[in-house]
Length: 218
Image (tube, rainbow, N blue to C red; front, side, top):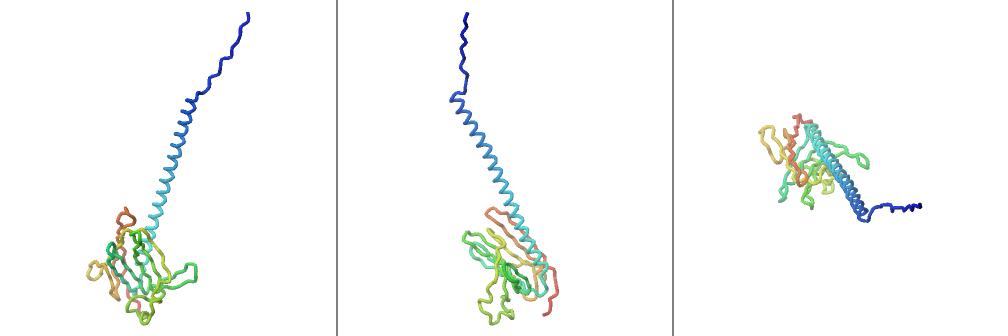
């Protein structure tokens, strides 16, 4: 008796199964890359936030060091003007020799000025300016000086995208807060800075002490 063996056809994947498998694979790959992209964006945001906080902290530390180390004969001058949408200020420190070395020979600034500058974006920049000569009115070196000699020889932008920046100073005799200061021969007891950075930046308030010192006779 002869028995014929028939080879049964091997079962394979149908076209529908292949399409479904490829679709699931695409979904899984998309989920993996989406999660990785979200994690990377979150990491970048955290790093940027930390960098901004470090920059702000360095700015406040710089101010604290400068104010606490002012000599007794420092001329402290604070002027504020209303620009409509912001209060723009110029805080000038004179008789505070500061060295500046950046891509050139060292230069000594007889006056430095911390100014708020309005930008087209509507935000403010806080700029530190270095002056080789005295710039405040009434100084001996300002008599007969030209406009060119009152131009800063260097500028550094310390902060950008500032929503508002307001100064106040405390008179140590009257114990009253003032928004400007032009008293020669005296320094305020405290300096207050209220600032907000960015559209949603929280208000930051810092108070700096100026230790009383005797004026140095020249």
